[in-house]
Image 1 (cartoon, helix red, strand yellow):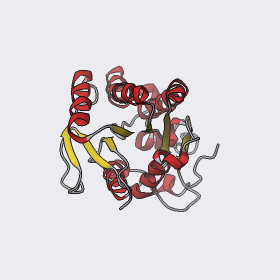
Image 2: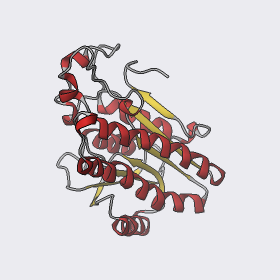
Image 3: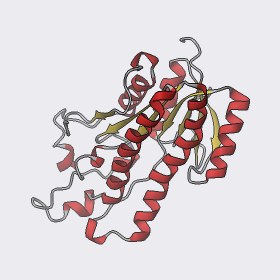
Length: 247
């Protein structure tokens, strides 16, 4: 166990990437407060858990205030909370777009604001958001080869939301840099979780590394960006995708 790194808040902590992140941060010496809509049975025992709807601004403000009073100052924030979506762009309903946008984008903005203000006031902190390869490559489906692939792998609402997360990360990085707060994002490719159970084998075969990634590999990238030794890295969108997308 390393020295105490302060308090880390992890949203969406009960998914595979969230749980792996909680464990990694515990191992690195952080005290961890995990939040999700429902508690997960596999969270590490040392993690503190609170139910949280990230789209409820007042609930987020209350949680952040309670967390700092009870567990100490927040030094790290990891925004994992999000939902997936499937479907073709021409068939996307406004209701589905609003659902995904509200949780993935608005939820991330609200938590970044509530935590970022406190970090900025103290001149210390690091934030990592979760983007996605599909926020860069406009999705993996290839309708020119298989007209049915977008039905199984199209995710335009999700991709749009993650592209917005990438943009938000850059804006926050520039705004908070003078206050000593760093903001980065990790953009995973196909990761073996429940969210990717239906990822078509034909698309898995396009990953040059020859496999899907693991939640632990994403957690490693998150910790790298949070670590104070990465102190000159801010505004970065770090790809973790087995060379599926290179920029």
